[in-house]
Image (cartoon, rainbow, N blue to C red; front, top):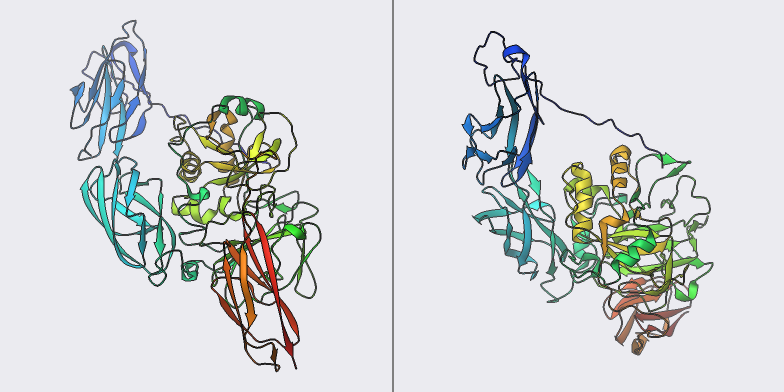
Amino acid sequence: MRYLYPAALVLMAVMQFGCGGTIPTKTGNPVGSAGVSVVVSPSVASVRLGATQSFSIAVSGTTNQAVTWEVNGVAGGNGTIGTINSSGSYSAPGVLPSPNTITVEAVGVGATGTSSVTILNPTPAISAVSPTSFATGNFTLSVTGNSFVDGAQVLFGGTPLATTFVSSTALTATGSAQSAGTIAVSVSNPAPGSSTSGAINVQVTSQSSGGGGSPLACSVMSTGQGGSLNGFVPFTAASLWNENISSAAVDPNSASIINFVGASDPVHPDFGAGLYNGQSIGIPYSVVGSQQAFVGIDFTAYGDESDPGPMPIPATAQIEGYPAPGDGDRHVLVLDNNNCWLYELYGASANSDGSWDAASAAVWDLLGNEQRPFTWTSADAAGLPIFPGLVRYDEVASGAINHALRFTLQSSQAAFTPPASHWAATSSNQYAAPMGMKLRLKASFDISGYSAANQVILKALQTYGMIMADNGSNMYISGTPDSRWDNDDLHNLANLTASDFDVVLMSPIYTSANLPSGSAPAISNFTASSSTASTGTAVTLSWRVSGASYLIVSPQVGAIRGGSVSITPTATTTYTLIATNEFGRTTQNVTVTVQ
């Protein structure tokens, strides 16, 4: 990927003083006696409440380099406007002064230099949200953390709630949830310097079911290519994609694994705007609604480890690498905002009759916490979903990414750790990554110098980390193509290297020696309300299944929840119920004869 490197901007204040021994003013950079001058750097600064800023000086025209540091003319400053020590380290006050712009001064012999400093509200941080699970309807949240200021708002899926400021460490908020799902809760401090915390996910459950989500939760997603999810977070709050790992233990082999990866290897955002070598940059997706027809999927490689169709894949769905996908991975990702399922194809090609060919395909319940059968692949080598790990523009624009990111490494071993289910080994080295390994950006990494957009990505890497999902170029982070990305700005993420990350504790790690075993789902019955029917007559298929993570009825129906479905066959058809969990798959057939 090619980028332009923006030039660095250097700000300095040059202070000149009048001659003849006159007393210098404390505005600008006056010329002192005999050409003495004092330059304070930086000349303009922004400092958040409670934070510090270091200033330096350059004194010329005299051998006396001594200066006295002042804030608004007060030597050493005070608690209201901030303090500064003899080394030029300024500490902002704990409460916003009025006005919120102050002047830092270095007073020398015959000259004074100044810097204009704007005091901003702090960036909030949240540590807990209570309750973490509640039903649709009216709710009250208690949010704890630090650096809250009066006027802070709790955001629920990016939408501000009616918020009461209790203290700098506590807020309460009220709102109403119209649909079930996993929702991100964060806190936004007001201007000056408005900023948003990281997020904690909460689970909104259905009133009727008392647990789990409702397909209505997905109705907030906008249909279309690259449609916004509008705050919806795939999978439950318990999903390892949505786990806050900011305080998780570091793996004892972290340093050795990072060194094997290549400590100096830079991060590369594998997404952006425009085309590179005639291809879009990133993995596209589309959101469809109830109007989208279900079509068949014909498998060309891994059909025995794939979920059969039908699937609501549009004939116009963009293939990874469009408009010239070539012979790459050719992923196709589709979210259904009507039934709340995610469909992912690998090696995909559209057929003239509306069906699709695919090397493999997987279905994911957006309201669940699905685990693929152990040792099974998916559209990704790790047996993972691709979509939930993508960096999307709609999330960055909203100010928060509330899930782990997907990334690739050149080398992997024959092992996986949850949530992965499959390996595709390229190395026998003990320090090669197992599929599913999580890296977390070190908390000590200073993100303040990055753009607001990049800070959103970096906060996610510190909070949720990134999951090794496939073999590929080292430290490549996956995202979606979007014309609104700033490629030059994204390239600044290449300043990060593997050494800026820790490997999060991996337990368990599965190899061929310790693969878990258990029972595949049990289908106790699968029946039709009538074994014969006339064309156009409705028939109900019913089933009883235990131990399944998800169900598919093929053909015609697809992924489904519940215990029955109404069909209207137009020809004699054998229907297959497919029940899957982490230990395997069970199927049962029933035939409806059309007379």
